[in-house]
Length: 271
Image (tube, rainbow, N blue to C red; front, side, top):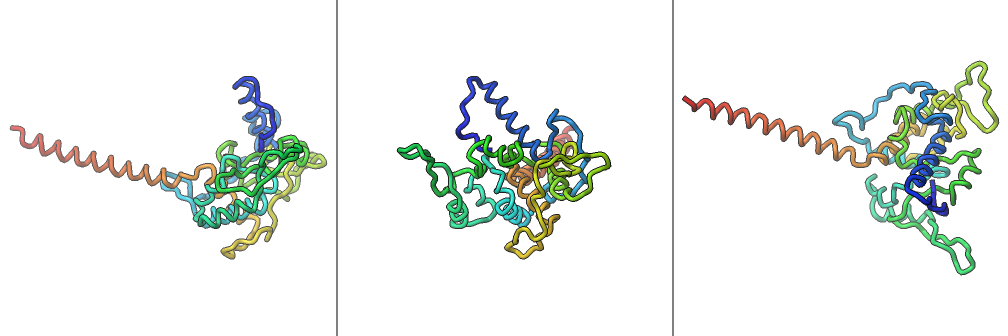
């Protein structure tokens, strides 16, 4: 969410409370937590999925990550920002510098005000962040049934259920509400939302995006790809960490074997 224009809190404690409150409001918008308690387990447990990036040897399928960015750019970015991500970070997708610059220049960011007090903007650069499309939190909430769309920079790691729940949520629309459930106006039933209700309309549709590699853009495919992209954004160095960890384990095993051999050789010469 874009926090520009908000007054700074008087104390660090109040500043943290405001940030936590804003994050909680955003998660409620997606049905990721209930309005009453962030720890409430009032949603259906998502089915377990298989992801290439899970496990100690996990790695990101960069083809899926790139397709996921397509979904984010064409669908999600209409409401959600990624304030912890810069356009330059997109080079990690395998893009050339010229491609990153082209993507950045296609967006505009605030550039202060002119002499008359009118807001100015400029084309974004590689150092600019993927901000919310709304100028402030109040405007964002007003455009989304009173609830702020959450920033997606760390969405894959900040709510219960993780990537499995994001995928289940994105593919969970269209199921009939259980008997006795009343879906208020402006809300949508989704069994993987908190209390089965969310303020976010179904974001994905069959053929809703066009993949450069020709992959059929089914709802399930879009959901899997954008979930993979969100996981990559939240932990972009995961593959490198796994490689480093494996290297460290191999080195320690080698040192252990060498130590055992030296010990045996040393003690074998003792009369």
